Image (cartoon, rainbow, N blue to C red; front, side):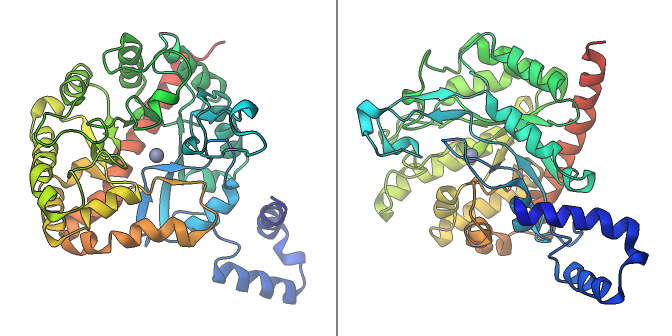
Length: 386
Ligand SMILES: [Zn+2]
């Protein structure tokens, strides 16, 4: 925080009292400004390479990157970014792992629980920024339990407690390998009316929904219909007025588009994954559904072979306005790891038409989130308590 606070102070003071400073101070400030040190995070650079539709500022123990450090990482390369934590807190159970403090859900058998305070943390971090920095970020509400009929009331409460902040909900999960089974309380389900209440309200208030749901169970049988496909399609069709982004194209770490990395297995399920995605994109009753290609695991599948790259580029070029890029980075320590995923996708960027590339990297984000900002602000005004 320390150095960044100084930065902010300088920003204000330079703007108002510039003429009273000695020339040398002004010169140093100008150099810093030009080098990007002072301007980092101050405005949306027109030459930005992408907007990040999927970004976690904090991790499974609710710790993470200082928001000013994130703006510095974004620098001029990233225009805008979504902003959310992780709704689930990993319990440190002394009985389970003793003095070992787990920071990830695979580190322990202890349960995860919904940590609603994450939304207040995100809102307060956002509010600590200057307006031109805020303009680059789209905070999302995540700290609700989608298996609780009261979940939707948390979302409304957050909007009315922090008006002017949030543009969407998510990333939240229903079926997520290794995670869903660790969540304390009721098991989440795509058929739960609690989830319908949430998606219906998101449509009413104009909130963008970023939704993680594995299409299938881990280590599924080749050739079988993905276990959650039918329920997912029915759910999506019940909410045509809600803008939904299906995270990671429905894939997981072991919920593969292919049965295994070997070429023999690849032939079995890879086409069906593509077919499913294409089926959704070409179905008029699912025109409100988008996908993100975030997560380095997804990038690995896509750039794995010339064939997988070709198939993906083909779909993106034909349905460019339905797919968004995001990093799915969690609390990145610095730029190197953060930009790794974008760079891993370079072969895909090269394979897209200029229009498709622009849509996937920037335009779709702007369309969805600009619309959400207007609608959600209107809902907040209409429902504000006197
Ligand atoms: Zn994520």
